[in-house]
Image 1 (cartoon, rainbow, N blue to C red):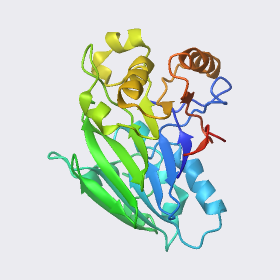
Image 2 (cartoon, one colour):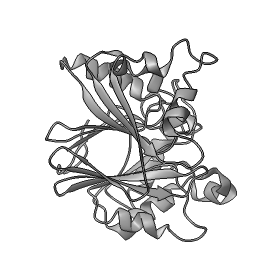
Image 3 (cartoon, rainbow, N blue to C red):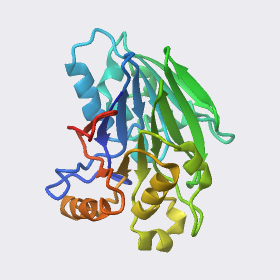
Image 4 (cartoon, rainbow, N blue to C red):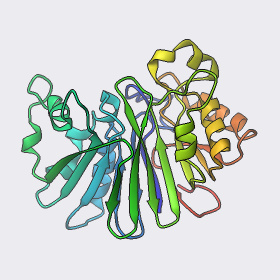
Length: 280
């Protein structure tokens, strides 16, 4: 199973010379299984370069599933610019939380209003199905791929996802907060012995205490979950807009002393699970 990072930033895109190595696009991760299943986790601005890459691969038809952790802007703002959604014959299923107050299709269509964009969701030429899923639900893809949603604590709610292909597992856990002074045991159990945990690292340990209402985690909490859940690799994710390449790379070297199999998610990085280390 291959995991490729296309957007690793949180809150707002941050292009510029200080973020060019790690990347300034917002959340988007591609997972490709050996069976040919294409999974896309979140549709931040990173989904735009992913779309261009999918087009360049020369496949006659692209079929994929887009799993949204939630619908805050930095997780859906790239969707209107995902070029494969404009190509007739392609097919995408967009999955996200079933809410009591608003249907997912209506939420997504809201950003296509002419107030913001000159085209509508219905003008996308690909076959697009929007499906609501519930906390704890498992979606079956193909012969060997299972995706399970786990509700987490974030303003408005969010889903973590566990993607399993046969005996290989990835957990995607962004935009979540842990209870004060402890870990969210739901996530520890959900991540148990995963091959890769992708965890929110928006805050420092000091910041997470100062901004509890923002609904994010620290890299210290990410390491604590990785240790408690006995995961094999930990990727830090969803960096603060103010975090520069230089600062993050220094942090990575420091934190690897605490958890040697920790690394920074970077745009363009592909992790091939089962290898000794992530490779680009």
